[in-house]
Image (cartoon, rainbow, N blue to C red):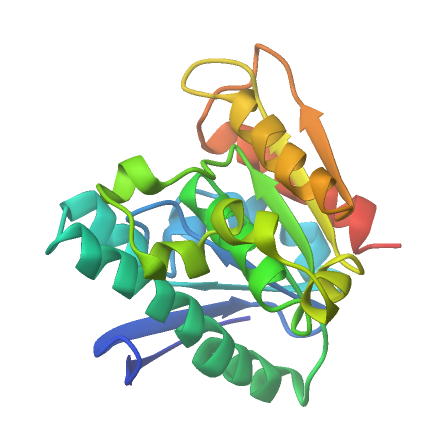
Length: 241
C-alpha cells in the first residue's frame, strides 16, 4: 500500500513530498541520494528488495524529497545558502516529516533512519541531532565530510554535520546519543570510499557513541545493487527481531 503527500514547508519555503509503502510495522525513513525525490527508492527498486519485510508488517518504509541535496547537486545559490538550506531541511524532517509519520502510525514511536551516499549523511545527522526521535541509523556508502560538496563552511554546516559538532558535544545531549546505534556500511569497489565510514566511526567512537563499520568487499560498488543487498540485510538484523 503506497501513499504520497506533498506540502509547502514553512521552514524551507519549498515544497516537500513524503511517500510511504506498507500498512504496519516499524517506521523506517529512507533518505534518497543527493538529488533524489521521495519516490527515487521505488524507481530504483530498493522498495522491491524490501517487499517481503513490508508485506509481513515488519516495516513501513517512508522516503522524502532530498531538498537540500538537490540544491547541492545544482550548486544553487551561494555556499552559505546551501548550508542554511541543509540545516532547515533537517529541521523540516523533525518538525514536519516526523509528525506526518506519527500521524500515519497512530502516534509517536521511535523511527529508524537509513540512506545511501548523501542519504547516509542525513541518516547519521538525524540520530546525532535528534536522538529523542530516531533510534538507529543505517548508513550505506556514506559521504560524511560534505564541506566540499557544499562548497564552503558556515555555522549552519557546523550544526548540521555530526563530523563538526560531535567533537565538542558533552553533557545530556551526548548521553542521549550514546543510547543510540549507528551502522556504517560501505562497499570497497568502484566509486566507494570505505575511509569515509572509518572516519565517521572515529568521531563517534571518540565520544563513546555505539557504532559498527561493515566493509562489504571489492565486488560491491557505489550503486543501487549494493544498497538492494544492504538495506534488507540490516532491517532483518536490527528491526525484524
